[in-house]
Length: 203
Image 1: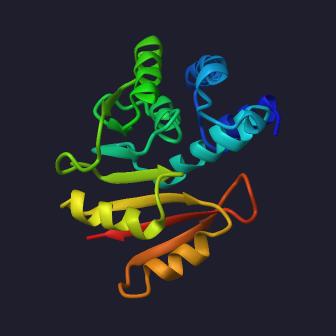
Image 2 (image 1 turned 90 degrees about the vertical axis):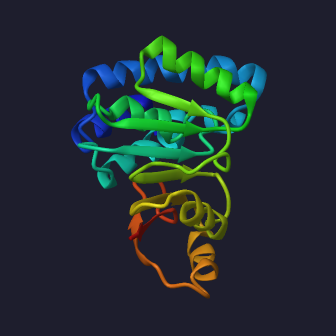
């Protein structure tokens, strides 16, 4: 999907502001440049950065209430979905937390946060201390069963877990729910017909 196609969707379907779009353009250029040295994303997906990574992350705004509280992105990597969601967020009271254990990726994220004046805070490890948040999001972090375990153990208050999963999402869901039943729903992805967005509510 071409950049202009994605930008049209971001504006018309997801209500991204012009300022957010401009910052996404800077972020994407910085990522392509950094990727030459660090391989944050596959070389193949560089050509579809806006569709494969930016829109895939951006679609999660439909399931997040930015009016209050915070979200935590587990395994932020090169900033997906955390940085994209932080760039959408216009509420100064809403806090975006990025968890990434790789020092190289954290350095990239820190530079982007400072350059674009993004309201986001970096953290090293999801297991260091209890996570205070209303929403957990993740993409390419761990298997769903492990993500659910982290969510239950590290977040003590009611929250929503929102996970982007590819073709094996249904298989992982069945395995994760084999011994426990959770309040969940599955949404279709805007970027790939076989991809899923799994939303689990913890009370």
